[in-house]
Length: 242
Ligand code: ADE
Image (cartoon, rainbow, N blue to C red):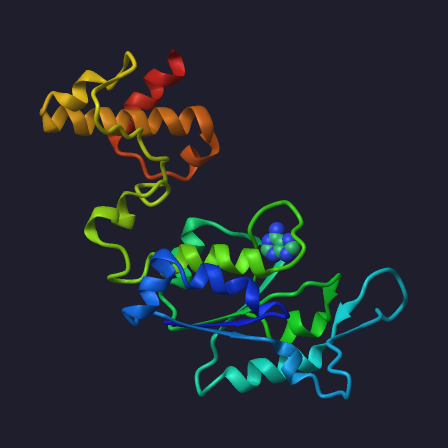
């Protein structure tokens, strides 16, 4: 996968893309990152990328020219998914991450100003994404969140021990069950007995039930979209009665 980022603050990406799994993924050539300062594409003497809004009002608006030219310069024969980060976009989710992970070229547009000229949205962008109902100072952190969640899904990036199949949301849309490691007794706080029993079927059942309970208690709205087995549906009915 190729990932292009357009940003006025490319230095924000260095620590994130050059650490941990995201770094490993580029070293093993599962992904390549290219962060471009789109100010380089401004065709005016002062390299201005924003201007006052038509009709007046507070704040500046990102001009279409530098962004159109940058996207066109970075686009080869096949058009990439062009993703605009903004609070008005569709709210990001694991299923969107899975969808983006199937692409071979993503291009993120990060604004740091009041707004984008609407023609960028209408004629250049394929997806508008928000990472949540709050306002950031710019799209950079949002792009990094999306890049992180997509790259870890690319084949071979996570080892078997960290398989994304077990993630919250991936496993039939439920939250993950609790995890424990040694010691079995830490300051009198004990690990649930079933986990040390060696009884694999019982452990699996306990995990499934805990996953369902956790989702019911913390994120009940996820249960409406989850694909539950008949057994899970029965447990859920029992939980509701309790
Ligand atoms: N830019 C500003 N706020 C944002 C958000 N919540 N998500 C994505 N991009 C943003």
